[in-house]
Amino acid sequence: MLRRFQIENSKIVETADEKAPVLLYINPDEAEKRRLVETCQIDEHTLNSALDPDEQARLECEPNHIAFIYKRPKNYSGNDQLLFKASTMGVFYFGDLLILVAAEDTTLFEGKQLAKVATVRELMIRLIYRAIFHFMEHLRIINTIADDVEQKINKAMENKYLINLFTLQKSLVYYQNAVNSNGALIEKIRHNASRFGFTQEEMELLDDIVIENNQCYRQAEVYSNILASLMDARASIVSNNLNVLMKTLNIITIAIMVPTFVVSIFSMNVDLPFGLKEHPAFWLIMGLGAVAMVGFLIFWKYKKW
Image (tube, rainbow, N blue to C red; front, side, top):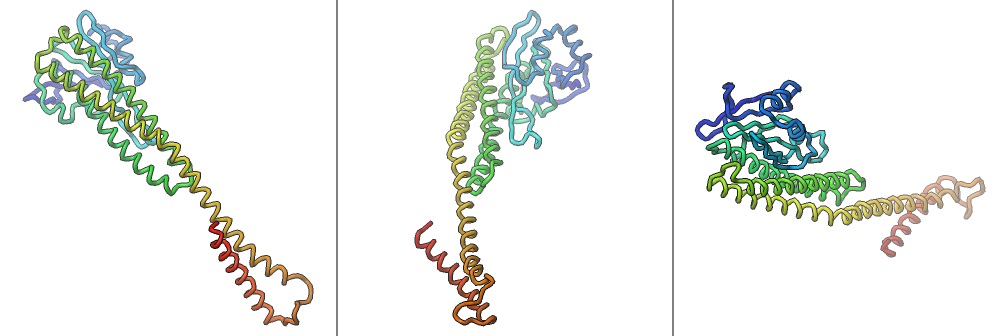
């Protein structure tokens, strides 16, 4: 699917103009891929890499354009079961034309990072800037979910919440790899600034992006280390909760068995001792069973088991 955009009053707006300076291809079909390869002379391998979520960020300088692939958070859905992944996006810069290729539809031009854009070249830089903040937003969400899961583990006796923590830790590993890959790409863009023709303001923006990306990576690293260090403790809590439950069940079982033992003695098919008759014997036996159970509970509490 092809969507066209242009810059009006420093805003990115969608347009139907075929000469629009920004073209966004969302999961292009074979005909659109062939048009990009044959008409725009985009390398087929680079184009396919832009649609591969496992591809690393990289920069390639072609004769008539500059291409790079960067990482951005994948749209999260409930079916992902707390697994956050990164996706890729291809950017092909032709000077006055910017072609974007993505595997999924997404709100690409939202956020304060894209609130004011002057040129196509600046838009190319701010797309990476927006991806960094998108990662940081997801990191805050992951941290909030992790705190909620940790509180539930304190009372849990099953593995479901531990599995959720493992999934969140796996997500942080994905994000660390993606953010680190973007960092290497940004450095390559800075080293090839003359090919892009960046202005002084755009170079300063790149410097800010480097700082923000480093902060994002450190934040992901801190969250990952915290989860990793707490996993063993949380597993021990689940095991301890199970032990407490088994202890409680043992108390209940033994408390029931003691009066049952007393009653079973008097229920044997023999004459009752002490000259007991039928009706007084019933209440006496029930009383002995109750006394036996109370005595056992007092003994249990005295031993502090």
